[in-house]
Length: 96
Image (tube, rainbow, N blue to C red; front, side, top):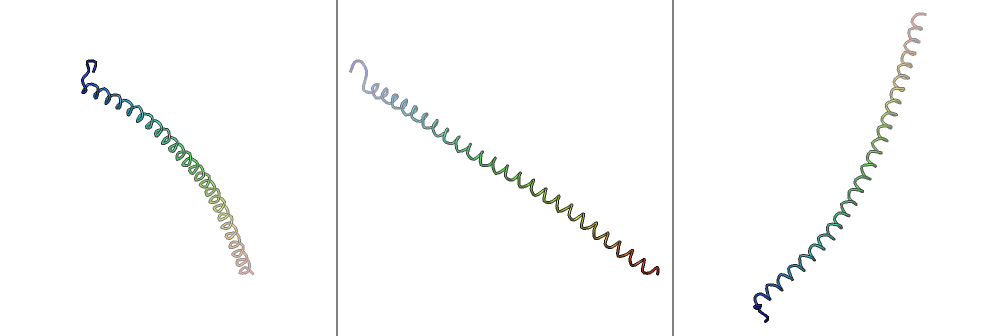
């Protein structure tokens, strides 16, 4: 047995097996981390695209709101003008 006991041989084999196991685990963790990072990047890209779409929709809604407000303002002015014209015609009719 060349000076080593059976226990020493078993301990050395166990140590080598643990080293191999640690190396394989490190490789798997590295691969899993890369895969998880890729998934994170995909999620981040998807969220960024959704945010861009939402911002574009927000701008469209703001523009539509501004156009509606302007149209409403014009309609109010036209109604006021029509009412003032009707009032002036009524007043002119009373003067005669």
